[in-house]
Image (cartoon, rainbow, N blue to C red; front, side):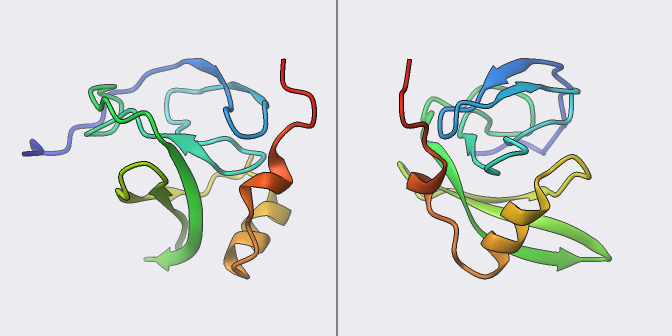
Length: 113
């Protein structure tokens, strides 16, 4: 059972497992700004307590109270969650998601190393 959601700020760098983008997290970063995917690592924001570790793919864009959110779904367990769209996020990718045209294979690197 999930506990009351408490945000834990974690300033971390990570490499996107979908597109390979190197991301300098600012403590609030929870998805790749290039492809908008992330990894299912949190039960509550920042806790790193989830053991699923599936890829969270963007499945839609929602607007709530004047803010834009990318909706992500884990391809491993099906968990969904909203994440605020940030000013550093790729607008072309946001539009692609909003039109229902996001496809993981379009972002995957040709030569993985």
